[in-house]
Length: 115
Image 1 (cartoon, helix red, strand yellow):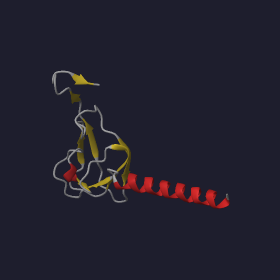
Image 2 (cartoon, one colour):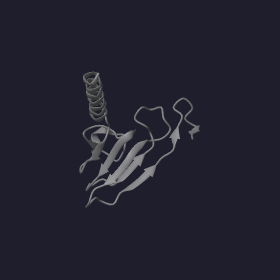
Image 3 (cartoon, one colour):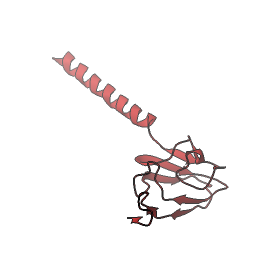
Image 4 (tube, one colour):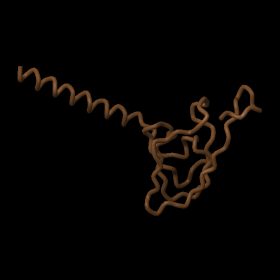
């Protein structure tokens, strides 16, 4: 019976480790580039790795950059009315940033503001 309990505990540890690894591999956490392509949050080329931080567990990290006025508004999946990120981190020596949040408009009815 002790061997069965030990085996079960070991299986649980493996499952927890694999779950953590999978969530780490698919996370969209990224760091804003020193020379980004443009000033849009949703442009993957502005981040390293080239992904957009967009999720409850994602971390957006900022350091020194020559583009510091960042625009948010359109979501990466084109469906949600807001950007979502787990946390924003400013490294020591980070440039001063300004974030502008633009309104979202319904793509089917462009005159309607999505709130």
